[in-house]
Image (cartoon, rainbow, N blue to C red; front, side, top):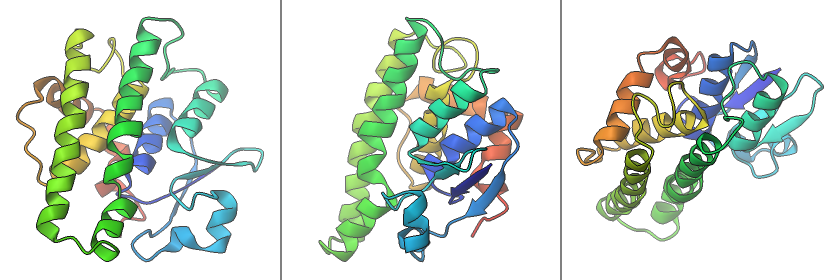
Amino acid sequence: MKLYGFFNSSASYRVRIALALKGIDYQSIGVNIRVGEQKTAEFSRLNPMGLVPAWITDKGESLGQSLAIIDWLDRHYPLTPLLPAEDPHRMRVMEIAGAISCDIHPINNRRVLDYLSEELHITEEAKQRWYDHWIRQGLSAVEQLLQHNSSGQFCVGDVPTLADCCLIPQWANALRMGCDLRDYPRCRTVYETCIRLPAFIAAAPENQPEKI
């Protein structure tokens, strides 16, 4: 099985965390989105959206979209489940994962930021304000969700789930972009817990063989 991804892509990072938590062996293939390798015809056959990651299953089937890949992993490798079987934990995990992957990440990812600069010609200062605004709005909501869930060391329950797979890359990106994260103590607790775990360490951008 193969994972096509970029070391600093938060969507790729999510899938790497899931693979590491489940202990799944796979081949990692770097796709350099800084030079547009994700836009090639060859890669588009794997993921028509022209985005990383792309997953090649043990049957040679290709699958894009990080949440779809993690769902596939959870169904085919059910040990160490990342989606709880029953509510209320399952619905809370999906709620947090959706808040991050659908509401925060898409409007702050690289192709959006590049469009703001290259097509709309906004300044770097204005682009930073854009990024900060959506991080504040999104993480404020996630922080409230964690409070409502009475979260402890992880987003939901006592073990990492899909929600943690989504939060840690988003938090890491916000740190890298210099965002003020002082108002999200529960998010910070989850982040600081997770990054000490072997699976999260193995999945971290700085530990990827194709780091560029």
